[in-house]
Length: 574
Image (tube, rainbow, N blue to C red; front, top):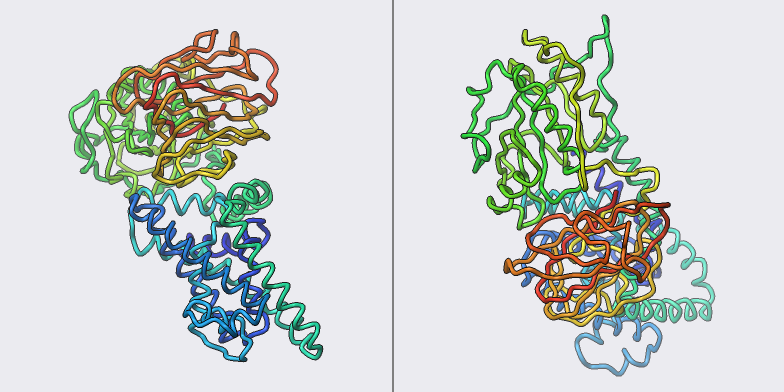
């Protein structure tokens, strides 16, 4: 219920987001009608339709995307007719076709207050509404992608849409009062009705041209993200800002019991170890590290986990790397095994493709570290990067409590190279950016993305954190795949490091060339790029393409793929 409340409040915040602008004309076109018979059915239809469509978008296949696309065009036609009927009453008088007749009823010229007509208008609006993805909606979509299609997912999305509908209803109440005051003047009423019709047609055109997601989304992310993040933290869902353990008497950490070690049934295959069970771990201090091998935050935390294992395994510490995939290719055991080898991981790693242990611990983050004492009790947890010294102090204290205080020696020594090196947070102004249509933001190629079908894209002028495709690509829910060469991706970024998760589904090497501001990277090349900008995609993983050697400023990154078939998933920065 706490997450449902968060979803509802997050939906209410959309009223201050420019992404709500395209649907406002459809909502305020009901201002002249009864609030109970006009606004309530319309907003309820909008909320329910959005919840169903968003659930299908989060977990459905290409058939769901095509069905929703067809529904959007049908809704655009219906609402365009509705707008024309408002502007030109003679059209609805002379029309005989059912849709135009419906538009006439919706225009309320006859005084008819049909609940069903308002509900149809709400369903059409729900098919078109595309709220800007913020932290709260991101939490819901991530849960949907992991847990699959459930009534709980649809309920949370409905709560989000209901919050937006509540804000719109409050705004509509004010609009209704204004409309009622103007009713005494026939001329004014006619003018308002025609103006609303023009706005409805403008909204239809904006959505048809993709302006609702391509332009307005840029404005909303900066206006509402901080509000949503603060709200999530106040409700206890902002794990990345948690406080460290408190210090009690005698300098000991206060580590209350938070839960117990879950069953490890359902994990596998195991790497670096035979399958482990709770029985095998009795008397051991255990650290569970949730990670996935293309996650840059996970990669940057691994040197510390690796160092803890090497320093304290002789004292009774067991580290288990629970690999919970984010992308489909991360479910492949061979890929994970190769990543374990590349990262120099020697502690046990187990695949959690069904999210069995993830769900048992109610985890929501990559990376996440859970600490268990020798009695199998959870005593501490930490989400995200950072606080490594505090986490190591927790390990040392739990070992001491078990009668295995670390032998003489200081804290573990950490070695991090390449992508493992910590981020330069003071200069980091670019966010993680997904390329698949399911979570894509700030995509500026003309015409927007074409889900699940080939399209030739072109670049466009880039502002900070804008990105674009060039050439022939097929954009799926999680990734984009080039269907011909040459093809390119461009991104305007501000960070020391730029990484891109890439893969070659066929296993064939794919050559690429990187430029920064139109020139080879030289000293700013990442570990997977030569100074002249050339490199090769050979496997599905995170590639470090830029590590700036000098001052960090806004730069334009471009990667040209010289062979077809590359698959691109997400940008990350450090």
